Image 1: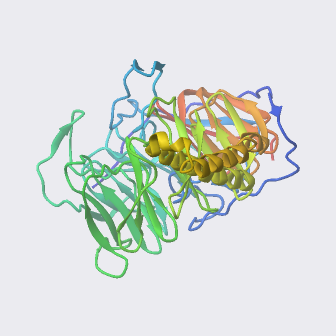
Image 2: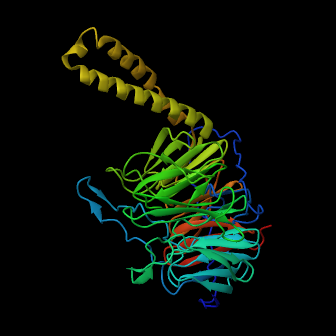
Length: 495
């Protein structure tokens, strides 16, 4: 059904320039390549969550700073998240201010194509379309459950999932229903956070590639889950590369990722799982039990990074893996976001930002992980030898450990030398790259940083945590946990 709804009139809040603070480690020497994203509409659009199906958070579009507030959309209530926050503190590990591992819907994230801004709402269970220039609402489509991730745009259509268990396809211009598909069939609904929802809500979003729409439906690990690949134009499951796969012991939630031949699905508190895109067959998980988190990105250069939130007594972290083999590469302690280009990667470390030479860093990290795994194996062998480890049986093993330790010793310094700059920056909630500028979201504020030096070059106030950033059509869009969407554009006098 198609229905209209109202929102508060757009408001204007001027931004102000911010002072730069940087702590260079090495000269950048002009290294900056932005990876082209496969399957996007145009360079001026942001057609899906975090720009593309790899969730890169990277667009070649550059916008000038300073920016000025253009309009603000304000929801009548803040987002109603699927899961409540974590415990206030971890008494065993003595960690306070815990971050959740399942916060995939803290804000109304946006997709932007042409003159339209699209977002899903967990408050009124609708997908909304706003005018890019004014923030005025153009239409709203009502689902029968919360919509927790933004719709994906593809060839004039919008695709999204809802807690009613359906994946939807709409006409993007008018918001009319084209098709909807529910893999679980008829069911008795579940009372969940004050609303009736499916036992199999669609909380993965929808990815569209090569004419096929992919989505998951899942909630409880003791119930089956569904991974679906259907015709993007009709919703039909018949045909090559289309299927409805029934899976066990999974909790698919958070934005799905896709590469040329893989699908990757976060699971919140459990490790992400990878699937063969053509068949829906599971290919295994990234990491071990409890190594979850819903932030995830897969780079064009073959790395998969995921994490965030507390696990195993850490204060939050991101972990890197080979995207094909699933081999572990590196852990970034306290990191909240990463943006990866062909040459440089950018880390949000909560209280600072950093840029480092991606290729060299991955090479060293891969070697370090291999050596550490070998040492662990050798020490386990020595332990099994018991007292014999002090004799001829253990001598070769101990000699190899000594050799590897000598190779490991300088690697920490070599990894540190890969960092090109670090900048103090209290903007932990999001990070994207637009042209030559990094945009980062903090508490009640958003800022821009020069990607070559880390220098802060602009900031402005927003209402709440800036959890979602997008750049499109010459504008910056900021989604917060208070249910606001702020739009910034070039300040008067800027080109």
